[in-house]
Image (cartoon, rainbow, N blue to C red; front, top):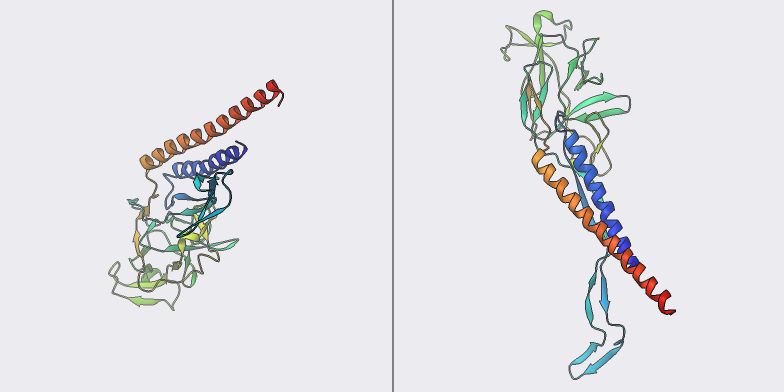
Length: 283
């Protein structure tokens, strides 16, 4: 009965972790670039139940056999194994803003923060006071050459992530002038967005504000060569949270939590009955 308390309590704790993940997913349905969290669990080793009055080994013509046969198994509870992020592609939403960018495929934008480089799928950017392309929190978006400085209505981003500006307003004489883009009569290649990927993006850690940081398990950030994502200007990526599916999971969590709670209550009732019977008969 005491073991049943711990088994039920571990189940309640596991469902609490799962409920926190589901609640966080529902709270970020409208957050651009948000990726839903999933909880994975593992069971403690099961105990084999045997009869205690038939201990020992007996022999027969074909060998030996256990005199205490297994009656069944007793589960000893579960624990949280990991809380990981599912990076399925979210739907693309048109905003018609030149500062909004979306990634179609695997990859992350790179952002300079006070804690070092961080990575995001949230392409809802803005023009900072100093003319740099920034996140809503004011952190500059990085290109291959560093922070990207642009002007309103004077830049375009192609599907390769290259940032083009009108050559007539280019301040840097070292910029490459080209006619291949055909956005303006002459365009200058300013920079290319620093887009990175990870060998095991599942193990990236969330750091708030839609930022991720690399870990030893995820591996370092690398520039994708073959499967580089498309960059779509004037769009943002919606979260990959499905409200109906998350609501169904929440109902499942509540029912599982209640079932484990009843297990603890039943064990408490049985123990109380046993103690009362012992006291009554003076055993």
